[in-house]
Picture 1 (tube, helix red, strand yellow):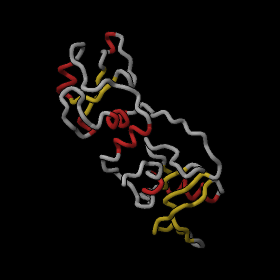
Picture 2: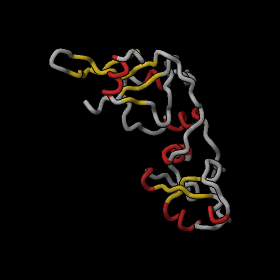
Picture 3: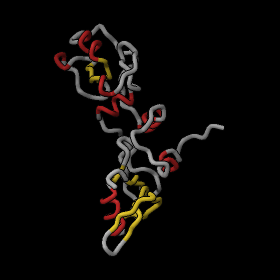
Picture 4: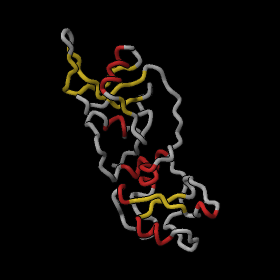
Length: 178
């Protein structure tokens, strides 16, 4: 049962967060249901059992009260690699996340900040080659992504876990292509 997380939707039925995706463990989801903080929108074909009760596990829950959502993207390793499409910004090759590193365009030793606007994804060899140099430029100028930029990029990559009951709620605000 530990592999049955619940997608959390705001009261307007949009995910609270896309990156990282807003999820609750099945235990926390059931607790929220019993405390009347969420409504169950969809369920798994799995159950939690006690000696006297059998309850279906929620796969999608919606908050009863709307929560104001901060629409800025958190500066995380995964989000940075996703922004750069898991591609080294110096050689242009694609890599698995485990084979990429943070690279300061303007090195910290020269006053460069650790921020969206100064960090790019780089493979180990390119990161070592660049070191403290200023003459190597990334393919794309680094910038803070919007949640929608990351959502579009993420569609090209398989999710580690994406239950079929979540799909309608993750992409309902996307432009339809006819």
